[in-house]
Length: 155
Ligand code: FES
Ligand code: FES
Image (cartoon, rainbow, N blue to C red; front, side, top):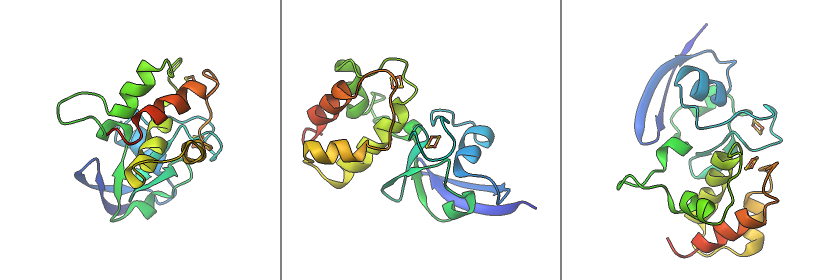
């Protein structure tokens, strides 16, 4: 039986009904059609499904949908600047050649954003820790770390 749930998604209040067995990822992609958040492994190993919940980077494929009640959720669709430009992290990834197939990119961006929102000047180790749960099959990570470093402190 479905249950009512209310939460904030990208600064918009969402009131909907969900099956309590769903994950947050299922609600985002399959019901709300927010497909920027990717499904890779589906069991907490790849980070492709990362979203920010109350300031923390979270694997939405493991997040029970009912836990979203009352929380503030941000997805990749919600971080565009008011000017319509990409978020500085996205711009830096592009400029540093850190996007190839792009499948991991939304998750990488959200993990990095959670770090940079919390810590204005993170160390390189902080940056590596923040994306330790995000797998990339393409870039070898050096360009990704360089991109995040280039944004740190400059936003
Ligand atoms: S899809 Fe969630 S961690 Fe891989
Ligand atoms: S750019 Fe292809 S998985 Fe990261």
